[in-house]
Image (cartoon, rainbow, N blue to C red):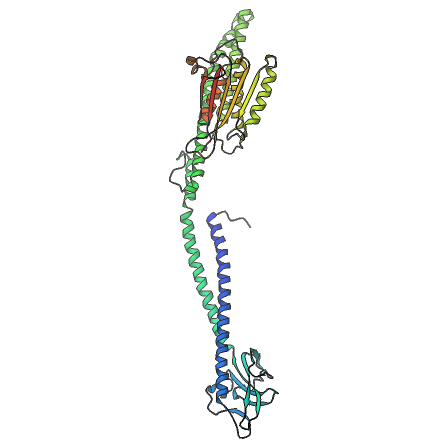
Amino acid sequence: MSPIRSLSTRLLASVSVVLVLFFGLTIFALDLVFRDLSERTVHNRLETQVMALIAATDETDKGKLEPGQLLAEPRFNRPGSGLYGEIRRTDGTLTWRSMSTTGTNLSFPIGLRPGERKFGTLQLEDGTDVLALSIGLAWEFDNGRKRNMVFSAAETLEPYYTQLNRFRVQLFSWFGVLLVLLLAALAILFREVLKPLRRIEHEIEAIEAGSLSELGAGYPRELEGVTSNLNTLLRSERERLARYRNTLGNLAHSLKTPLAVMRNLLASAELKSVNAARELDEQVGRMDDIVGYQLKRAAAAASAGTGLGTAPVDVIEVLQQLRAALLKVHASRDLECRLDITSGSKYLGDRGDMMEVSGNLLDNAFKWCRHTIQVTVRPLTTPNTRREGLLLIVEDDGPGIAEEERVHVLERGARLDERVTGQGIGLSVVKEIAQANGGSVSIGTSQLGGARVEVRLPAGG
């Protein structure tokens, strides 16, 4: 059997099971109450009949006890009436038996002490159930003698069973109708409550068809997080696709000139000359720089996003790995790299982003510092977000960056000193990743005397 895919059908089926169980228990409890009440009613009625029988009984001339000819209940005198009576001594001697017991072979309890009562179910000869009440009584005769007698009355249960069955049919009918009405009301209610989910489904279909760019507003509070994250993801995917297209366009455009120069050199007779070989090498190097930069930029565009579906990145682990690697590279310079990281700091985004940003900043700091690098990491809280972002500060004691050059160094290919190896794209990649994540990069002067680069990486709301 295939699972039920409709959420409303699942809810309705679950509620139906709960209602059936609840109504079943309720019907069972009401049936018990009704049966107990009916039995009490029959008991009280039998007690009344026994008391009436005692009141109508008198001593005969022969010293026997018999009710008078005009009993309070004429059904005692009608065979098959369903009401039966009997008077016996406690030793079992029959004193009087109603005409209604003819052919029933009904046996009432005997041997009851005065004041003792016995109530229970008996059976007639044909198997019909009756409820019987027997009461022990000490009877004083006219001659002063006392004898213990047992007065009994019984009533057939057929009217009781008929009434009980009628009550059960009515009970099941009422609860059945109530169950249908409740399920119909719940189906309508579920349809209204689940309208926002159907709206999401229709809007996603419209997005797939290209008629919508993102989900609309006005959703219930419980769905706002889902819809806002979906919209953020959709916008991120559109921006990522645009970056890929731009990167490919830039790469194609950037390679046009070096390729044209190389084509001319290959076609010319000067290919064997030293100058031509040097110029060809320069163009190849330039193409390698362009490809390297565009690949880094594409990687930044691909990895930058909202952090949806990614595990938190342990900042301490990443920075310790980078510090250890760079200290080995610059082992001959006797450098010190201090880490001041708030315990438990996590980056809620892509690990590649964290490695790229931290790696470029630390690489620059190690190249330009004299002796000391200071790395500070603090949680970053921003308005209208439910998660903490990250504040990353890298400082060094190097020559620093002049104020008029701080905007320029964030541009691609910008290098303050051509003597230092590199392509001049590290800080530009940091800037692109930060901006793609809704953050920023700022450059200032460190208390150590060198540059201070501050990167803010907020978390998605």
